[in-house]
Image (cartoon, rainbow, N blue to C red):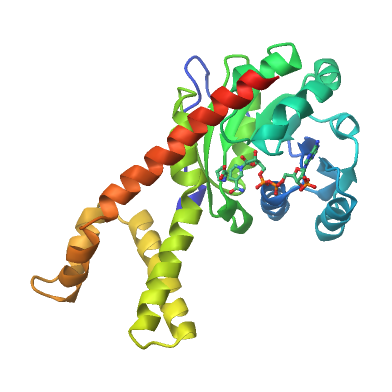
Length: 295
Ligand SMILES: NC(=O)C1=CN([C@@H]2O[C@H](COP(=O)(O)OP(=O)(O)OC[C@H]3O[C@@H](n4cnc5c(N)ncnc54)[C@H](OP(=O)(O)O)[C@@H]3O)[C@@H](O)[C@H]2O)C=CC1
Ligand SMILES: O=C(O)[C@@H]1CCC=N1
């Protein structure tokens, strides 16, 4: 399956990885959207509910997680990290400094692998909030993780050992594609591309559907054709040796319908995507400067 492939490129100096026992325990701080996507994917991959300890301040959210996944849910973050080999930080970026500072004594005691999925928060700031350079893997996942079709960019600090690299990678591979980046600054680009990307494409889906409805197709038919076309194009591009440009040329007959449509899209689509990814990347950088400076 293409989404299970991984560009297994651990950071420089790391040798090949060793297998990881599925008996490991994972704490997740913040039981929201991404936590649910991750837990759902890992359970489908063979993880057991008893391997998770999730913390969330909202009782309704804790009940939801326990009922939906059968996992233990805690109000107290420090309690959730007890006995965990890995701690996933899954709160909003603006909360992370406070949450980590509060957790710091427990983390310094148990010394787990820290896995942060927060957009725009640098590993060095997390280590500073902990008060020690514990191993940190930064992960930028995306919401299709919920259907095991996610795409995650990973970055490891030098303190992360090979077993921990394998642990982090195996977690994210359970919910989709994994790529490692060697420079932390590239995590901002990953955020602006695949982290935010599902939203860009949902917008494209809306626009295609609306355009077909405007031309007379009923909404249900327009939606089905749009979704299957986008799914089919992505699947074909993933499975093909050809570049997207070549695949596009196979659809585009000279003087035909596609050429007429592409001519319109070429008036702005490329530059819009350059600008969108640029703006999202810049926002991730700005968040890192802002939230890192706060605590
Ligand atoms: N959504 C996405 O597409 C992606 C998100 N991310 C990153 O993942 C992280 C989580 O995002 P997402 O899941 O969307 O956010 P959510 O708001 O859905 O989840 C965060 C959860 O953390 C809870 N929370 C708030 N305060 C605390 C606290 N002090 N201790 C523990 N938990 C707390 C929130 O509760 P309450 O709602 O009651 O405040 C909420 O349930 C973010 O840092 C984001 O940047 C990364 C990639 C993609
Ligand atoms: O919009 C955000 O900030 C988060 C990070 C990537 C996707 N959602």
